[in-house]
Image (cartoon, rainbow, N blue to C red; front, side):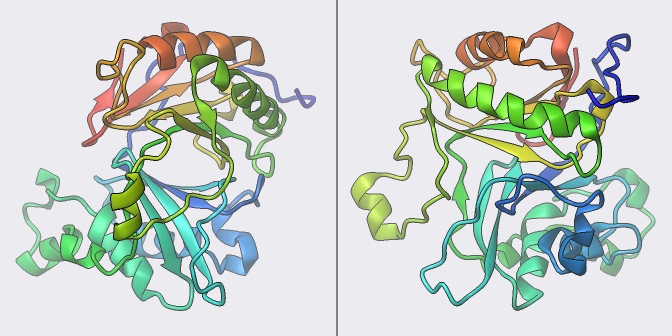
Length: 299
């Protein structure tokens, strides 16, 4: 580790994951970012646009509905018309993939936030708001229909904080852990997918099926700051709904995201065998978890 940046091996990891309703995982195709991701490209980026709407002072700001906005190393899907600049994003634990968010108009960001990120039910603390104000803070699913090609996530996602621009510990551990996960995943029968997600039209999905990887695809990516650099390496594993275990039955953690801390390369094989293979949480590494629908998991 960099001098003066030690790993905290003393604190109990359980409960160190901050509660959230949704993570927006932006596909930047880069392995590292500025300390504040919204300052990339002089602020002209999707993270900045989303935070403008949801952050403090934003028109949809809600302190009782935490949406975490992260950058990732995953590459964005390629639109058919390559002259149009778009960005892709994952929504977790909704397990949705948004392939094309046009960067020439703010309308697509509004559709993303209003159609997918706002709550469907407000916190009781908002009971005193006017009907107009309450309506503004609630999701409008019809808005999401303006976004093309939205699909369900079928692949296991392994996300590793590698934000060296924010803290050197994750900058050191992130790339090493990504390499080890990619090396070990085939041993559990998973294909490591590195190409951008290919978006199929309705006819193509009918011909070859919506999940070409048959639930055995996995993507490993670096992500920006999630909190707790002192617990590096920090890893989040998302298991898509419908994932099958080795016995052919539904995986015990299907539809969940599991956070681990203090992960070292020597732990990767065990994480894959126990958590991915058997659906068991490793208590000594567990920071927290979330279930599709937003239920926070604690030990």
